[in-house]
Image (tube, rainbow, N blue to C red; front, side):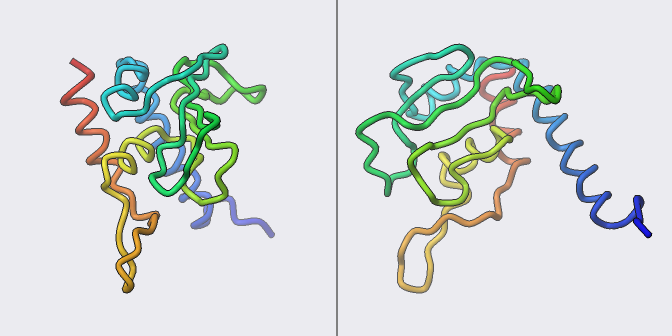
Length: 141
């Protein structure tokens, strides 16, 4: 028997609420301005997507393969793509996502860490609240 009120459902509902809050914030700011401020220089625009070189310092991206959706367009199932991002040629986790706050936190260095050998590694302990506060303070006016 399926437990529709179980922990998995609570986690999904919590994630959906976080995305809804992020989407409300993102609709109030100019994502292209944020990308520019973060040093992600747009080299092309196709529809709602801005293309740039990958922001990962370990990815030598000579053919811009990173994109961010900067408009509130919808997927076939009705979800907003606003703020979703992806690097098509990089296999590392964290280089794609549906939450722009993850991208902001990552680029600002808030979710990079070093392993025991001193090598920079991506970690999923992103502080979305800090990223959201920073966006509100600098861009939401």
